[in-house]
Picture 1 (cartoon, one colour):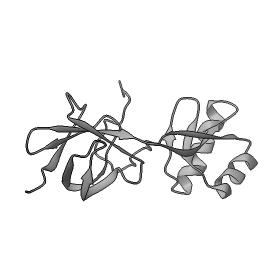
Picture 2: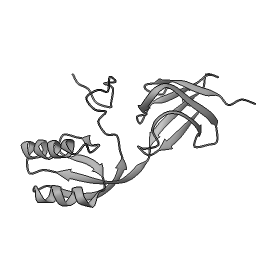
Picture 3: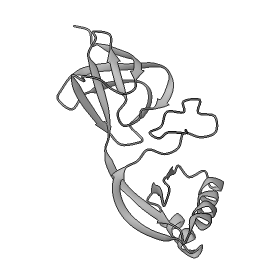
Length: 151
């Protein structure tokens, strides 16, 4: 028996048959055998590598949809003294090519003691947190649907 294949990502996932819960690293894929949270085996076979976002649907060739869920992982929550300070901190993280999830009042990054020391030296408040990690896609990411409105 052949495994169903997912070649299309839908947004959002409507009426999923199951979910698959993955950390950020495991959600950055192109082709891989996968198993959903409740045991549906399938082959992910996308045209190009991409970061699967929380809420994306993987459309299987048999019509079922598997919803992607972002697994919480150990992160740092970085806060600045004010919006300008937070922007400066974001610049320093970007200058180090550090994957970052940017919110209005904080930045989430993977835990790295060297970065924590640098950020605290720049006056940031850095605290441990566990949360789903959904970093920005980068300047050359042509997909602009990453969970917030650009309106």
